[in-house]
Length: 103
Image (cartoon, rainbow, N blue to C red):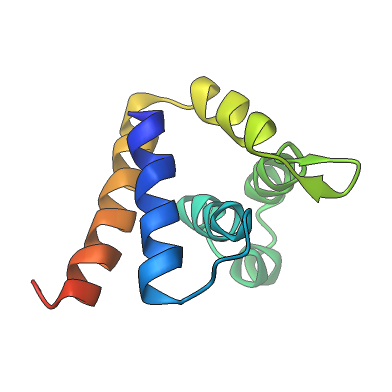
């Protein structure tokens, strides 16, 4: 499932956004994954410290010396519960379907 998530993000970035930068798909995963916790600005506004801590941890664990690495992202994805992986897969699949005009 993790390989499918990665390959769908690579497809999405390459075909919909025309971005061929080798690791730009990781930036999209980094942007989308914390959304399932909530938008950071909203979490700050309501003062949800537990959610902010989790949000920041997810974000930080994808980086190695301030550079996003696929290895780190994959390791993090392996630790997530199945429902979150399915949510992420559904999210990227929906974006691809919208690009293709299937929705």
